[in-house]
Image (tube, rainbow, N blue to C red; front, side, top):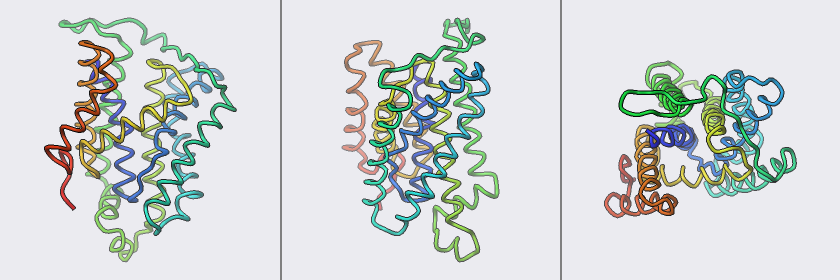
Length: 278
């Protein structure tokens, strides 16, 4: 159950990362910053309004708007250049954003209280589990299913899939690819933002939290194979469960086991579990 909680949070972040990479061919090293912004925006919203539910609804949109502006101002001018340019730009953006967070919210971590209605534990018959963590499993599962339905069953999802398969052909058919890119980038950032809101009551809020999760996100994407959202979700759940079991058995191994898992997968399948050879 604890593995599902961690895996659900990682799946939201990794899905947004893979969505941006698949559509725009950008390795977005700054993706973790939008996860951190989700937590900080939620903290500010809770301080001003005092309502967690409003923060859960509003903050992802706010993070998506920041992502939209980032794509338009920083990444769009780099379109068509070698992937190294966008990688270095997003890495530099990450370092600058961490310092900006420290200037605005301070260098020390901030506490984030669990909503009153979700405090306590729920008896599931076979196990008594924290109510808030059960809520996280339900919400992350619902969002992932909604994302799949959006990509696979809607006309806009068809456009995104077409642009991912062949952006030049999609543009020749009259699709405004630049606008779709901005939408996809904002959507990926919003997914990271909602993950940040959900993670805040469990781990607190601190400036470097984006760096921590982007490293885990890279591991997930490598294990899954680049470009596979389904693989990213399955890989996230697998890694979340592995980390939870390692923590239970011998907690110092928790930070190492995901890299051992990545090494084993790459030795057996260099393209990842769901990837294909170029």
